[in-house]
Image 1 (cartoon, protein in one colour):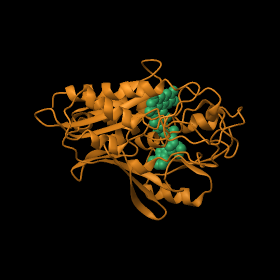
Image 2 (image 1 turned 135 degrees about the vertical axis):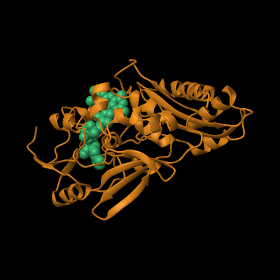
Image 3 (image 1 turned 120 degrees about the vertical axis):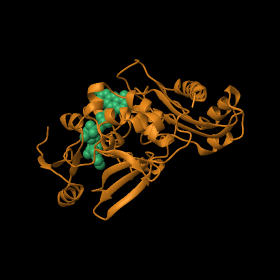
Image 4 (image 1 turned 45 degrees about the vertical axis):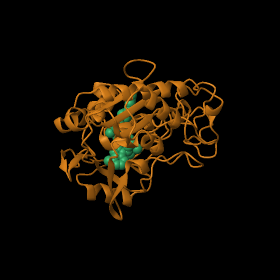
Length: 330
Ligand SMILES: Cc1cc2nc3c(=O)[nH]c(=O)nc-3n(C[C@H](O)[C@H](O)[C@H](O)COP(=O)(O)OP(=O)(O)OC[C@H]3O[C@@H](n4cnc5c(N)ncnc54)[C@H](O)[C@@H]3O)c2cc1C
């Protein structure tokens, strides 16, 4: 591992100032992704700013919704009464991720910033990876690409974003609160992660030196009719091949008032198609409507040698997730 200096921050201002004062610095949350990547030589920060003592570990009601501090462990967020009651899709997504030990360490901010699980990104013995070494090529295009993107990819990168939590946050239209050298700002979840385009090395729209301070979940009257479905090669401790966060608002006659459908494991960011969601409004909840919406979501999907199976899989997963969501008693 390359040598680095270790700095411990005890406030947001401290952490942001330390980051501004040092070139090539990284914040350290639970360390479950950053430290692995540093050991492999994929990440080589000169300075590591430990933010685990920064008091951002509360979950509280805020502006009609709920604010989750960036340092809250994933397991605490998943099991908090406010989240279980009002945003069960987030609880389900968090509990579908990693293992209990990892969830106890992993923080909300770190989960948002975790990097792809593309095999070629993780292994520096492969020369080609535009995300790791910009301009070097994408070995996954013609290589092993079972976990890779079917939507929104580019010739430069077909990696996927691996988070479960972020898929639920996208469906809930969460807002990420950040603070940087120019002060605080809010980033809607839809704009937080980026598609790869020609710059796959940049995962998010966080600016240099900005630190995530909280995640805001807006007040939602229909958050309980929801389901997170994760399809993976093993039933535990495996990243998603395809996942779906579905949230439905139905009237007493079973007509859809609003639908939210976010996909994971299929793109460089959680994937939503607002027009497909809107097309469900006013329709009777049921398989016919769900299938039509699923087809619309996947209309532009493109498979590669090892992952074309994801297209029909995602279609079926959307239908199943909506069926389960609709069956929830609220
Ligand atoms: C074996 C294994 C299996 C896993 N399985 C899954 C899975 O199935 N599903 C899933 O979703 N995840 C899975 N994960 C990933 C896990 O969820 C992430 O490693 C974790 O969420 C990262 O959080 P952390 O606090 O440990 O981040 P760290 O490792 O501390 O940091 C990760 C990145 O975030 C940055 N960062 C951290 N906090 C902040 C902040 N407040 N502001 C700005 N930047 C910040 C760091 O600088 C770093 O770049 C798995 C991980 C492992 C090791």
